[in-house]
Image (tube, rainbow, N blue to C red; front, side, top):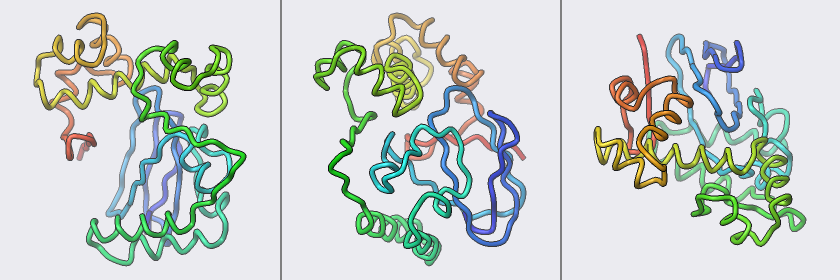
Length: 223
């Protein structure tokens, strides 16, 4: 963030306000609706890492942290401080993305003792499928997810299924039964129940309140 800082008011409410200079923060997996309140003009770049992605880059345990302010300043090596100059040197978003990718790839720390697991890319829907895919016992799978992500494998798969349902909202409009079937819910009511649990809104209310960006990012702003 440039000339802005994020502060945690509660475990579900954050404020973004003016503060001169550069600041960084990391947030983990959201298990309930989160509210961000913005004040003034801000310039922010968001990098969406796979679970454990930051640990793979920086060789420090941050992926299971719910919220950590000034993460680059406190947990990364001093050479990472120059990432701000790279990130905000140009206003064009595509130039920023290219330069950031080059910077991160150049500074990756390969650690042979840690195995990087791209959790979000595992195309499975049940815990027993995880066991087969990773060739681990149930206890080992549960320990892996609990230690790495702070949640059970069952809860993570539940969140992943819900996220797929969100992406389908643009494709099938109000056909919630079709969406539920596509992403693996037993029925439409189960999909709607999970939706309300994670967003406090029904799918219809959610679509009315937010806008889609590139069919991947949903933005809700209130003035």
